[in-house]
Image 1 (cartoon, rainbow over the protein chains, first blue to last red):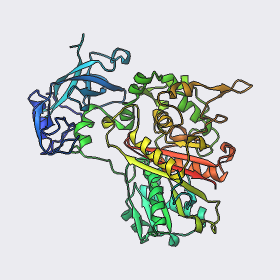
Image 2: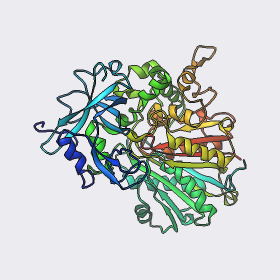
Image 3: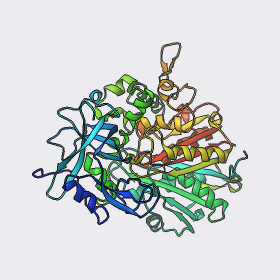
Image 4: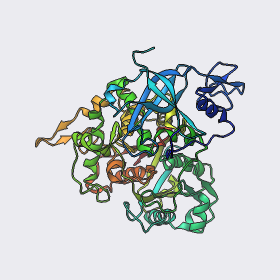
Length: 142
Length: 394
């Protein structure tokens, strides 16, 4: 965890608590549909594809590709230790896309961050109760 | 295909801004609504007593009815972001044609800069609070920036090409005495790229100007409009859609689905196509928004907006003519846009007011010749909702 973390924190609700329990345990856990097989993000008590309520919390692989990103130059609280946030949309190999952050060493260079590059989940514990799912580029692919 | 039976049967008969836009620390959110109402009703030659429908988004209809001390028999508080008022025109058409109200007052007021009596949206328990805000987003610039690189990647669009949007829009602002950037001089695409980075790929000059202000429209039947003092501006086509809330949920980061759907509805309602449109108001919260809308509404083929924007010409004395600027073939955002006129937060009202002034022929130095039709389009939040309006002189 990060001492005196100042960034915005999610407040889990009963319906999303298993997701945040998952990140705390180093796992990306999402609702998966028992009928159509689809995965849902952000977590809901039903399948976002077929509206079936037959969903089960299931561990995702944590692998995906970088779909798009932006580099925030505005001061963003909670990022003092890592520099400018690279706000990313990652497409999980299970299908859903999620807004996240890309972990980059040093000053982010947009020309060195290729779209569709393979990424993998990494976990950033920010407080005793909250661990945020971040992603990093997989060098040399998988 | 025939036009919708309601097409052309309802008209905008009153249209006005608040006295000023900009930094107005003496005006609360509700005062801005009241001032806009006063000005639009005066423009229409009507009074508050004539109004029986209230449409408002930043303030709820409850707040408005209490503040103005009225009891409308029809209310609409649809709040889906910046396009809310554009979408309310469609609702006003339905209400007027259905007999639910006769005179609709669509009201906008927003203390977007001074933030007097304004509320922040969302909670840390909501989908945005849990799954978007913790990842370093700071305001609309950081979320509107997110889809853009995907358009660049898939279609080869460049930042230089996109920078033609604010440059062209500034040319119009220089002709508008109410525009916040009226005295700031022209800017080039290179100036846009050299301005301070805000959220890559957006720079400062890619971002709208946050301001305080408001505006209002008075809408009634075309029949009643005949007896009123202004030349009526007819509602030919309307459309609306909402696809999601967060930008991260876009199905395709190069297309606004709600834009496509609302545009198709509006063109079908009016039985028109893009080539029938003389003047465009495509809500420019940030440079990419009109870029996406030009494609998604069918004015430019999908993926070709970059080269289209870059295809400028020159006057005999060497001045650049942008496609969407003064003298260009598709005049757009002629008030100076959110980028150089001013953007209170839900700018859709300002876009419609400019379309009305252009169709009345009262836009002064920035008046475009021969405007018989105008299309207004806006997004709600970041490419989430959308509304389209086609207006005409006849």
